[in-house]
Image 1: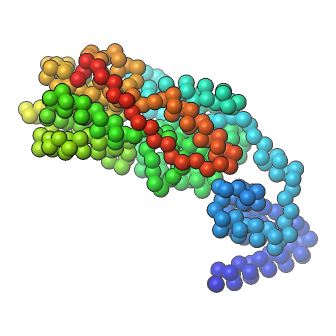
Image 2 (image 1 turned 30 degrees about the vertical axis):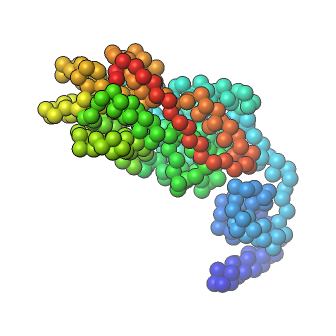
Image 3 (image 1 turned 180 degrees about the vertical axis):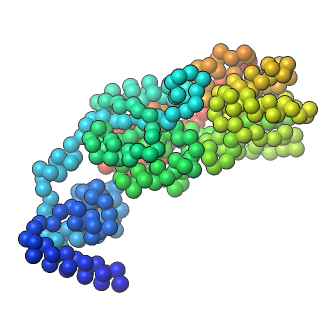
Length: 358
């Protein structure tokens, strides 16, 4: 009730001011009175499903009271599309100068093909968390929407996702499902992958396990792989033999350093599950430096099936994520959002790739 009284007072005051100035109401005026952005006003007045019913009704009512008329020419200009999609890559530490996680390179090819098939150009750039991506790409008509690959620390990255949602930016991302940000994610069933690859090792007679990779909220995909791993151990009553979890980000050097810490203990595992192939590559290097042989002394498995995993010594058992389908889904979901359609999160199953390391 109090809100309505205040709203009516502000609206009457506003109308009086406009009468005295003899000027027309603008979308900025409606945005101010409704407490929303101008882009939300535009979507609400075009009955877009991206605006919830309550906000849409409030905006339309204020527009009616202000006798606001949509300028068709200006509206068409605002809706002008670039037929371009912007792909923003997170700059990752890498062993070469690319600064791109090799897992995303295969997905990049799929995204490029899917954009071409849909009649869109693709603009590729590195992410800068300090930039306003909505203003940089959508408002400037450089791109109609964004695809986000990689994120670093997810707890920091969540703020960026929230900002994009508040700005009504068209975007999708590769990554784990987040119930606080539904409908924008395409990802792999990391829990299933972690469970599956652990069961594979158990069937090979392995009992003493270690997991190398972050297992907290900062890296939700790694955490899901770890949860699948430990649940597989529990399902086979192997919890008591679990050597431990050792933190490592996704790089080869991080895997090497974590493995060197693990090998300081005399009670070594007979199997190591790594949260990524790059981590596993570092573990293999640490085993070699410690005179340990894979898989005779310790079996090692990774995750992602990046190209190098087939050429390590020994070749690495891993989990294949369907990068071709992932790229196609990211593009098709984004185009649906651009066209005002709703989408849901997509979760794909992984496939076990067995090689000599297990």
